[in-house]
Structures are given as structure tokens and as C-alpha cells.
Image (cartoon, rainbow, N blue to C red; front, side, top):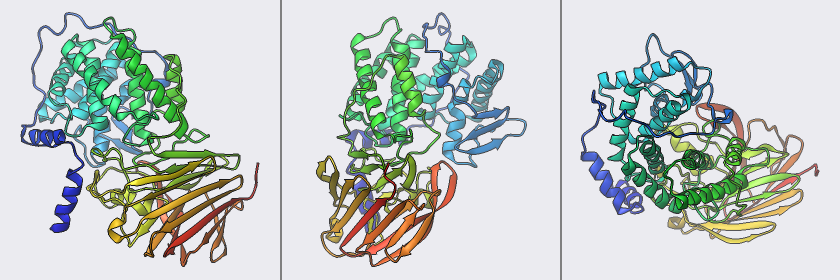
Length: 529
């Protein structure tokens, strides 16, 4: 009980007081549903908005054919009719079903898309389906964009969108904040302009202006420090610029602010990606969810938004590239402090590519379902860093919560190396320090503990890599890369399941290296280019 109370205390003390207030308010508020309610003055005239008409933004292969959907790499064929409350694949899959991203598939007839929307709203009315702010936000944006692009101003459908936005206007996710609040504000801004509700538009803009100033860091990163969510929010920023720049009653200062934010975010996206276009899957990140960086850059170019070319800084991520390898290093804090739902216990971890192919990776993010796999993927042992006494650096729990958390300090950064430490094991009286030294064909990684401890270092190889043993402390990967562990007491090659996408797993090998005080890991690249 004491442990439980302490974890709750360490979790809650990082929250804003306003979050606690709104949590309580939302808990006592009755659930809300769609009603057969019509707004008589709704259909006089809609604002004439426009978006760039380009193939790069069309999502495909979500609706395979009528009644067959595929989200998060899981396919479901419904029989006769869609169960909009389908939960067998988890809450996130069901959310994707109701986001209506598939409205932008051009291989589906307009009539079929209208039928899907009406079926959803009919089902929601009949079954008193609970309204939730986040899916309402994404669904509203998608239906409005579909209506604008294809010129389908269906009065019944837009009546329900208006009703959902009316609900959203009174249910901003102030208890969660972060990317959820941004999505709410993006939806109300677009909906406010489209339905000529200046109160919605002005409130949405005020929230976006305030939140983006806080959520976008000095180096352009989104403060939840997930490269995937960074791309999602960058797309939303570009999307707003797209329609707002041609909006008749636009605020020039706000548009200028938004273009500046997009430029900063584009810079960070470019800095964090690998040379082959991959993103490092730090924190909650997976392939196949967000638009890739090439697509986002194309969109930005169409809108005339250039990159600011800011160096990596406040986010805490660092990068090094030469002709033999490319490494991304996590020297970041748990982010954001009051919204760490997508954070992992991964201080001082790294991801390494060689010849533009993944060599050393992390276990990845495959699910948001609370349980054993979710706990594992957020744990310290799922990352390329050090575990002491079998404990996580930061107390990740409950799927999206963090209690006690490690604080990371950068002690040195130069042209050819970095040194950082974290205090996640201060309750054991130990500080973990890690240094990286880069040479043309070698990386030296040194882990030092402030006193002896029961330490294990984890190094995860990508599933495509082949491992051979030379001796007890030296191994060779793909006949090209040699890795030495000096200071190791024991080295075990262990099996693990790698996931670079949701619900997809591949068998791979990782090293588990036991040591007490200091471990020196040297990676040699045989073939310099």
C-alpha cells in the first residue's frame, strides 16, 4: 500500500493543478451522446475553404473493400454490417475505425463514403455511443475536409458534425493537455471557420497560440519527444496553414506565427531522421502511423515553408553521422513533465545505423493495450542502456503514467562525442554516466557507475543482423562490424521480439552484459567507405 501511494504521489506531483481540477470535473460529468437534434439555422451558408489538392496527402489501404478495414496491421472483416463498438483488437484500433481517415481514399466512391458516415451516426444514435473528445476531433476534421474537397455538403451529416463540435467546445481535454489539446483546438479552429462560429475559431486559435509556444521546443521538437507524434503535429500545423492562408478573415500575425512553428518543426524532423529517411523509434513511435518526412517536406514546399536549420538542442536528442555509421542518442528528460504518457524509461539509450541500415535498435512500440507487452516496451531493459538491480530508471506504469523519474544531465558535447548522466538510481546511491566517443571507423561507449552495483547493459540487434562469436567478449555482426565488451563479467545473447510497427513482431537477438562498476563497449566498422 505504501508503495502504491508513493507511486501515485510521484505521478501526481508533476501534474498541473489545472489538470487535477479538470480530471475531477470530467469524472463527475455525465456521459454525453449524439441526439436527433437539428440546428435550423445551420444550412444558410458554409464558409468557402480550400486545401491543396495533391495525391501526397491521400491515405490508402485502410478500407480494403466494403466491410473490411485494416488498422495497426490488424485486418477485420465485418459480416453484413459494421460494429462501430468493435473492441477485440483494442481501444486504439476502434478509435482508428471512427477517425474516418479512409474518407481520403480515392479508390472508394463518394456514395460509399457517405454511406459509411451515415451508418456510423445511425449506430451512434441507436446505441447511445459515448462521445469522446479526441476521436471527435479527428473525425470532425476528416469529414469537413471530405465535404470541402468533394463538394458534398450533406445537411444531415454536417448537422451531426456540428453537434459533435458543440460537444467538443465544452470538453477540451484540459485534463490531458499535450497533443490531445492541440487536436481539439485544430478541430474547433477548422470547424469554427467552416460553420462560421467565430467563438469556436477564436478560442481554438488562442489555445493553439498558447500551447504551441509551450509545446514546441527551441530546437523545433514537440515536447512529448516522440518522433512519430512530432510528425503528426507537424502535419496538423501544415494542414491549418493550408486552409487558413486563404481564409477571408485571417489574422496575419497568427498565420506568421504558425509558419514559423512549421519551419522550426520541419528543421527538427530533418535533424532527427536517419539518412535513409527512417526516424529513430524513441518513446512511443512506430512506422506506418504518421505521414513520412518526405511527404511532410513535399507539403511544406507546396506551402512555401522552408526549414530553419536549427541544431538539435533543448529536446535532448543528439546525432552523429560519418561515412561508416549514423547514431541517434537519447540524452533527453522524461517529456513532457506533466504529460509523459508516451515516454519510456530510456535515458542514455541510442539507436545505430550502418551503411543506412539499422544495426542496433530498441524493442519498439507495438501496442497501447495496458498489460505485459506495454510495460515491457516502456521499461529500461527494452532500450540500449543500463538496468540496475532489475529496476527501471523511471517508474513507468499503468500504460501511460510515470512516477519517479530519472533526470538527465549533459556534461560534455563536442564535435566527436557526448557525455551524460542520470540520477534514476539515486535511491540505490548510484549515478550512471555514459560517454560516447566517435572516430571514423569506431565508436567507444563507456558506462561508469558511481559505486559498484548489480548492473546489466542491454544492446538490441536488428532482426536482419547476423551474429557470430569470436571469443567470450568479442562478437562480429554481418562479417562487417565487431563489438567488444571490456569490463563485462558475463555476456549472454538473448532472444527478444522486435516491433517497428503496431502488432508486428520479429525475432531478434540482444546482448545482456553483466558488470559492476565500468563497462567499455567498442564498435569497430571494418569497411570504411
